[in-house]
Image (tube, rainbow over all chains, first blue to last red; front, side):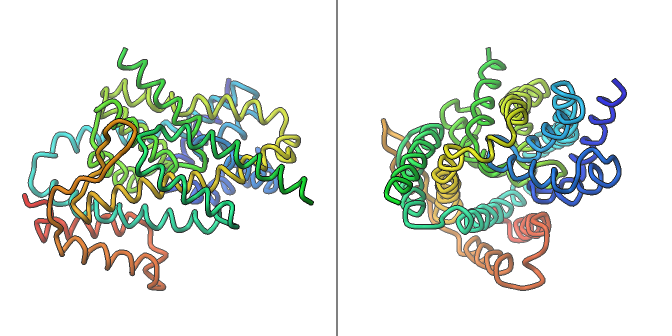
Length: 180
Length: 198
């Protein structure tokens, strides 16, 4: 029980200190999990992080589940995961309540009009970065373009694109393997 | 009933969004469209706040959307919905760690999944551009979406976007700054220039 509580608290700390995306989490995990608590080695952490990137879900959550389950099995995985999301729940709920209360003010409306422009640019930059990592040859470029156009012009849940892409990925690699 | 639906929508998001927080954006957009719980404009505000507060972006967005839909219980339920598939999948994979990483099919699936995930985020990006910069909107009718133009563009918005784009991509010391700096600066510009027209 004590260790479950420790897992929860440590990952709550990681959650508070993760500012932005999953990448921002690595140095904090190294300090808290590897150096302070000795719950995993540097190499294990790198492994967990790599797998967390290529499994569904939020990378930070996946990594927390991994480390928690390594320490204390299923209960440990759940404790660490609840820990990493706990600060978000508190902070965002308070903020969301405040913003809803002030959203009628002209200053707040103007501020958000400016912020939306910024969000535009931030999403564009995120796409650009991901593009470098995911589009590595002709086939992946075609998949990217098809999903891009389909995502804009077809009224279809993203789920279907994801499922289709996984199947196509397997088929393409299979054909390549056979050709070689 | 509302909470059940909320849980289910976020469970799907957690299960199918591959590649971290930003990958959940296309799913959140689709949830807003199919349920009418919030608009795309609301979602952009949510994304901005999520980037500027502590915590992983994906979780912040889930919590915020949940709060918008159903208050504090909604926030908790949406977040739990999004992390449930992660916990299940990771607990299974942790047991067969080595064979998962070396599995040929997993590797091949991700060969297709990565560009698709980027494509979905790109599509979300295109919709934001259309709405914020061009004054257009994607509206659905049946299976196909079409673009509807319903307003002029504001040159100040274009200028702000261009300046941000250059600063965040090409100017050496500015490039490294945390997004919160740009979000705060844009908020200040918005207030100073009355960008919202209010």
